[in-house]
Length: 207
Ligand SMILES: Nc1ncnc2c1ncn2[C@@H]1O[C@H](COP(=O)(O)OP(=O)(O)O)[C@@H](O)[C@H]1O
Ligand SMILES: O=c1ccn([C@@H]2O[C@H](COP(=O)(O)O)[C@@H](O)[C@H]2O)c(=O)[nH]1
Image (spheres, rainbow, N blue to C red):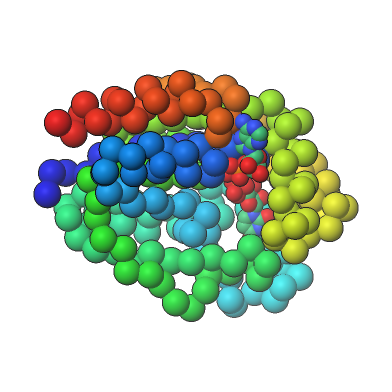
């Protein structure tokens, strides 16, 4: 197999990274191209050793909250054509699940997460770097709805976390990482022209 191409999709929480990834997957499926998706969130550190009250106070918007060394190892393995044991993470218990999933390499790997462009040691592994640039008020509104519905949070806890960590860490780490991107995408996960440009570029690169 040809060396897989890795597309990194980053941006604020709630910016539309997951939707953009899903829509990119659809574009590749239409081209009949196998794709493997990896989410940086799965590489949040395991915290089984901490009581729940401690886990709830953790700063999940700092690069140190992730095990990026394992993510890097996995990307290198996939690039070499090897399978990986992909971790799974639970936002409700703030730790890894005991089981991992065996993933095979594919010609296209889409990686999605908030800190992907903020880690200089990871940048050389990406073939295409995308930043989803969505105004923060829109991100917050989307995050409120999602976290209450899907991640077991209250409106008060989302607002508190946003003020104490999500917003300051965005300005410290995520916003500056925008300048490392090859493509900056406005209009979130539904920018079909950006989706078309990226999928056409990859199609050409794989020929
Ligand atoms: N351009 C858009 N227009 C409308 N809703 C969008 C758009 N982009 C994303 N969304 C919605 O916003 C929410 C958050 O998007 P998501 O992709 O989960 O963000 P992220 O992965 O960056 O946290 C989801 O419900 C998604 O469907
Ligand atoms: O245990 C956790 C782990 C993460 N978070 C929050 O998740 C977002 C990143 O995920 P997105 O899907 O990009 O929104 C990050 O901002 C963390 O604050 C959490 O609350 N708890």
